[in-house]
Length: 94
Image 1 (tube, rainbow, N blue to C red):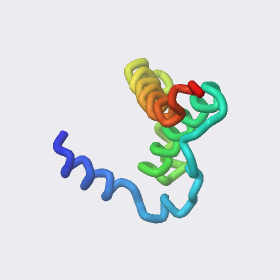
Image 2 (image 1 turned 90 degrees about the vertical axis):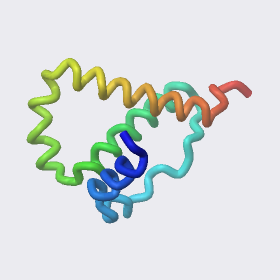
Image 3 (image 1 turned 135 degrees about the vertical axis):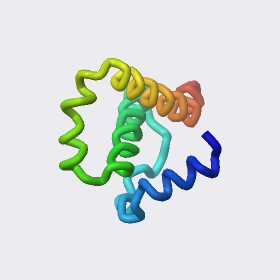
Image 4 (image 1 turned 45 degrees about the horizontal axis):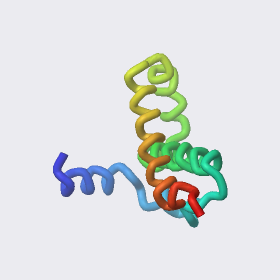
């Protein structure tokens, strides 16, 4: 998708109020396990910011929890976020 269109879509979907909560202060983690947990949190927060209504998220959960393709796509998002966190931590090599 065109980057401009993607940015526009995200601007429309994500309300400014969704960014009021500051939770991501660093990508640095002590261990790969903590990095993976951060990647999951990043993925969940993206969904929360895109669909700020907890009621709506709960409403659609019954659909996607039985959708193998959707679950695989969610796992891919977590994996991408984990790659980002791992790179930010120099893959935990000191």
